[in-house]
Image (tube, one colour):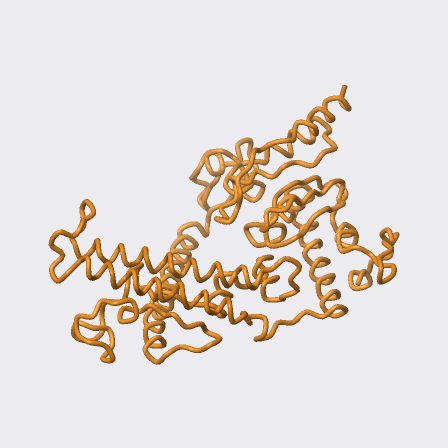
Length: 382
């Protein structure tokens, strides 16, 4: 695999296992990480990833090298520049291709198999959600008189909100069953591996494939429009039950009922329209910005002023602060941890500022160094 990147240096340490001698994946990856990288962060599965002098301990996933979310990639570019970052990505890709070629990596429909017990639990959660919706409708009655209404909402709006909460909780319960069944300890399920690492898809996608899809939504609410007083002609007029309004108990693997297929197509159309509208809006905005700023240039004067072709000053200092955004860290002008690291001559890895990253799956934790790392650094400095 190291031959794929043209590596001719010293080979990593050989590890002896029950199956024979081998190289560890951490040692192979450490070959392509620059020696001046010191880093510590949490992976997507909340495991510690520590990089010290280019030697890695832990698991690399999307949170290490992903677009807009790669802590390791950010550190390499910030420390050594974009050329070194591009080199790392190129070598990492070649190593990955070599690993897949040698070891193999594939996924099939059997990766979404569930036991009969898990399927029974999912069906029970779906049935319970439908029963709770029916009970809520009976509590509402014909006109909603006496129904507990939320402030600022009509009885009908409150009913729909309560039903959405019930159905979402039912989907979540069914999804947990599928997740626990697929992601068991020691699993070699390739689909689960891709979802957890962030390579492709998510565990929610897998639960919809294997377990249950849940409520089809349009603008965050149950389906309303269709035929007179009903979404599809297959149901009675005025019916407000879970199935009649778009609750899909089937999974993609098992297959959808005809009515469920129509319901899901309605919610799928919304995402297609949003994508088309968003693309045209952002494209037109980009065109206007380019035309407005195509003659602006940063002059190499004392304050890095911004001027146009007529030499008129647009900004006395670039961005009003003179900071290069490409050297910033997710909106912040610089990485204070790296600066302190260099000033103290710290040997311990810098802990990543997790709050600077917008991934909703991130787990926040204390910033800066561990107490042991700081004391060791200060003792070495003294």
